[in-house]
Image (tube, rainbow, N blue to C red; front, side):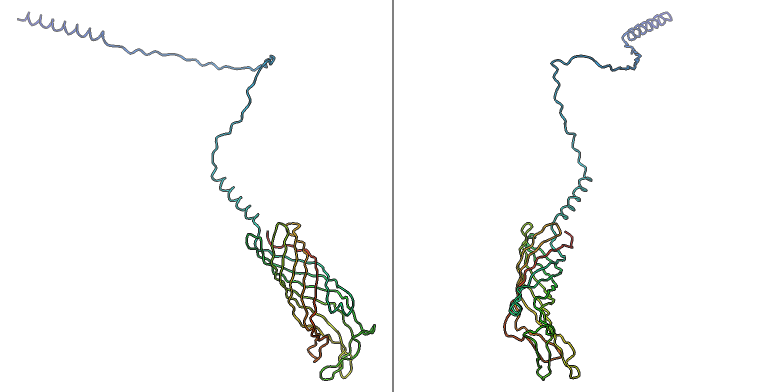
Length: 300
């Protein structure tokens, strides 16, 4: 019995050992291969090559644009700068400035008395204008002061004139003529309508002016004719103006202008005396041609 059990045990052990050897032979082992890599530095030496270029064709060089990248911050700055430049280039709609010049004036009543055709004068003024309709049309308001030199002189102390002698007021006070000339100041306000075509600016308008003429008499003082008094005009006139301006520089304008107005019932008065001389029911025309230069003070 013991013998049988021993034999059976040996048989089972033998069979198990055999199967274990078979499985061991079928198992695949992992093999690791290690490789040593060595990197060597290479030093290149450039030497000019000497050879003849014969039938050598080189391709044409082409410059390619780099890829466009938007810079939003720079674009915004450029946009603001362009907007400011456009505003600076845009013509101003409101302008103002000063002007001055000289001219000739013809007065019909003075011409009849003296024979002189015209008198020379100078003027200074200020002006302002407002543009409309794409800056083609503008309305200009100006105020000028003229000074006209004398071309008609009468002096009773030096010569015999047609005005020499005694004159009497309404209450019989005597007046003795002394002198008279047509040297005077003139004050004028003008409203003009201007059309702007390139550098040429024709205009037309209306004007209101006031002349100041003076005539001197000796008036009584303590019953003696010894005190000189001036008798002056006190009249406002309405007329018209025509002219043209030409822009020579950005801020300078040359102008030529014709004006005409009428004096009605010309008379010379003094508030202390009930007396008028040159009281006429006629209408006298005054005409003048002036040439001037204007300077623009406002921003353009």
